[in-house]
Length: 236
Image 1 (tube, rainbow, N blue to C red):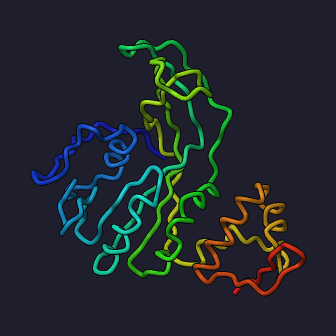
Image 2: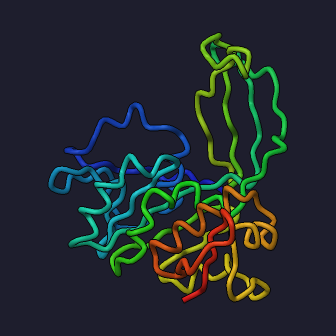
């Protein structure tokens, strides 16, 4: 859908210090930029990633909990779009200090659109606001690792130091309840369980539970009963 360009961003004087901004976050801002956009703008007690004439754009690569309160305040009086990337394709680049590349390999792990619920579970109530839009970017990225001895024992001391955007493959926008119906396919029984949903979507059952939790909060489905320890849901 688009390679990363070389657009120069102009930041507000009263914006935050961007020295610690990660590459992925910065590159997504570059990908979104339009003429007239302003970056790192102070609005009341918050700093906004990108301010457009008619809306505010926030980019969050992970941990929606960190901006939950900020978003809830902003949507009261502003149109807000939250952008979240999911790595459909990832390359692991391992380096030595200072930035000597040792290896580059393709990761077997492939992110899917349904992974958005790993984060949406933190803020499902916001989807009920007319002022809120969620935009998912399916991307190709590089994960930069460094053999600095500071990483977890699982990675034998190798640290993850950055993520770099290579390409935006697809953009998916969620504005209304109907936009989420792709996760409730027609072959799903009228009354269904998490196990039913997991089987049809070919996902783990714990992921299905995240979907049904969000959808109950969003009033897309309701709980109507229980079979043994399994909840039963019905589409609204």
